[in-house]
Image: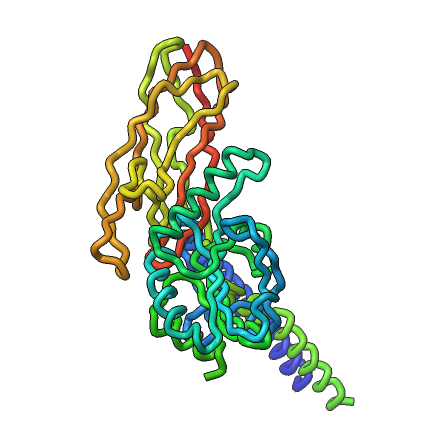
Length: 209
Length: 168
């Protein structure tokens, strides 16, 4: 009699467990479907929550900045290694990027303010280049140069950022900034337009202040 | 023996409980980095149209810009901005004789309230004037645009606009 009760209880427990699991699975899948539907319908840019403050944290943070050697607007090769011992802000931008143009004057001011302490900005254009078409390529370089002039950029402007985008985690959004300290380590990253204050704090971090 | 049987039942129940747990509970929904979830612009309709063969016909093409994003209108205020443009590649049998774009909406980024942009948000309609010969033509038209939100921009993109054009 006691054994039967235990068996009956166990069977009921198992059945209720399955019923609960089925319901929980249904709810989970329903929520997942709603999330998927919402993401497709909205298509919003969303930021990583892993940093705790909703800000982007690149996997490169804390790692050596990927090396590169790119041409500047005069055709001269400029490499990150040229700035060994300096704090460098590697700033990806593009001529068509409105938020990039908002932050550029801040970059110029901060660069002028901190250059004496060993700080430099490398502005890397992510504009597409038609490398196989000499005329188009010349026009594209001219356009980048004209934009740089309009923005009164005093720091080196490098082209063909697309050739190093994989090393820097992809340039799916601009502006994108990597703050590199004097030892060549990425100490902070910034995706999208933030504020001059935040940029300055990251520059100080890169300088070791 | 009785205790052993009881332990077995408990073990079986615990195992079933673990197995029955929704798999999603063991995963986190963390995203590795900022991404665009979904497409910035989607072609909505029409998927199929019937037009008089050989005659210019205006077709209203409906597009939707994802929430929170904007794209430049066909006539952005600054020359450096990339305009939205609709095209039909050669060789499809269907010709695009003209395209009439809606005017852009004024838009300002919070960080630069003085600079007005001309953009499309939400839904917009392009009036495409096409000429199709008799027959069924599956046209892979294109929409070129460049999308941003308030803080960042995505590279220019071209999406396919598939329309089944029947000329009668």
